[in-house]
Amino acid sequence: MSQIIHRQANAEEKEQCQRWDLWESGNTNRFEYSYNQDVHFVVQRGEAVIHSATNAPVSISPGSHVTIYKGVEGVWEINSPIINRYQYL
Image (cartoon, rainbow, N blue to C red; front, side, top):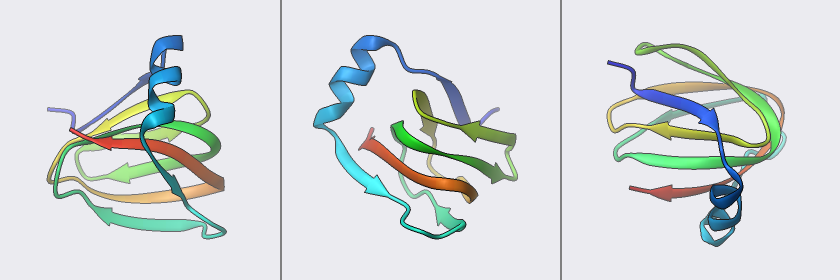
């Protein structure tokens, strides 16, 4: 089963996510995270590739809607600083 779901956000989701919390990667080019709860986010700016043992690499860019499920351990390879709006499920 895929633990990371990636698709393009629709117009309604892009609008709704503006009420969600903001996360910024800063100037790092690598970010490691272990997800202890389900989360989804919409990328506002930047580009990255999320690597995990449960999925093929997932490329994200502005407009990407991503859901990551509890238990995923991911490494983000950040190509340009990421800004996203996220919400825990």
